[in-house]
Image 1: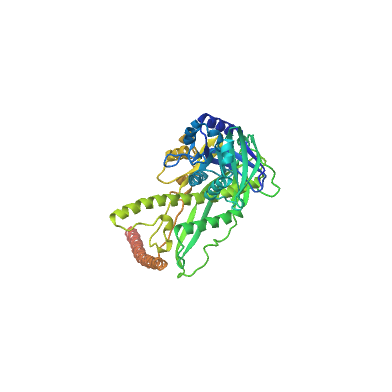
Image 2 (image 1 turned 45 degrees about the vertical axis):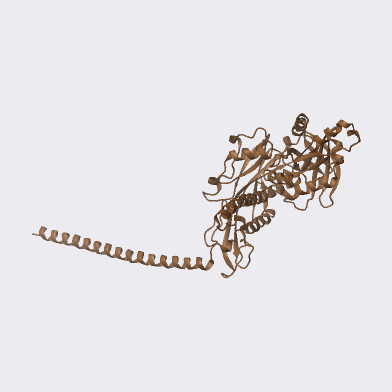
Length: 490
């Protein structure tokens, strides 16, 4: 269990000052940091306030025992009964906070995650709030941001009190719903972070089984990602050209290049099957640029684990983004279909691949790196139709950046020209009927043989003509030489 939490003082102290200056009586937001099952220390790098809801209301407010809000309590205080009333408790829109956490978690890279929530409220209001309410919100955030290491169930709750002014932290164990206090102190973390990056190339082939009805695009894609997760998990690792071993010493320096060494083996998923069982083939290929940050006094093995988790999490995020976009587009098309009386199309994640009778190709969002604090980067994912301006808007909305980063400072390590050779990030091919594909292949083979026969006949004719021309030239040359020599004789 985590016993001590260290916060980045260069960011948290100014954040606390802004909260005091705002005059707000309550606020809820996300904690960005790192909690590890292998360490008793946790790190807090930044706090991100949850934005107002779609209706414009706050994600967190105060409510008195009588059900009235803060303004109602002020009005009731004119009668001089406020001293006898219990302090207002905190009311949180848990669903909205969870959705914010889901969006923000996509922008984090290895070694930095949404690890809990923070509360800005007076000591009295915080104590008046039921612990079950706070645990429920933390659980919602945890479910919206699943970790690569799914077995670790600890999350963090930070309370910033303005009356009196102080910080306190608690560790929430999700299984038992307990809130245990832990030490909180400030320190300098960002300056000592080490970055590890790699470009992971992959290609896997998944047969589409005609006997199952669960071969939707999303299910098959998740199967491929899970296969990659196992592949990455057992890969050998090179860091700066050195093979990682158990006795690898601590590393220094800011940036380290990582390479994964995979064994030469056949694709276990593309096992032999009969034509009657297979309805098609899905091919996933591309390159993922992974990054992870290693905190102070953490072992190098933790950086490798975080980097592997970043690669798999990045692929899952892209699939979720496609599904979200498809849901929005499907809702719009359903509305149009209802008006026109036409059948609505399925969202892309619900497409049953073995029912398709044509080539299906889809581009996944590409990852871009965005400067956040000092030399620390976060990420965003751009659809083919999006630009860096969309990234700036998301940074401003989701991360409450007052000054979004300049476009010139953003990095695009996964540009299509660089690693896709002008093709999509993920190619889904040959999703038609196998017998039809075999017939097409037979026709193409027959056509090819006929073409080869015609070419062979034409080639033989050309050889015959050339031979006749050569013989004629020899005959003419011989005749000229013979008659010329006869005339020259006395």
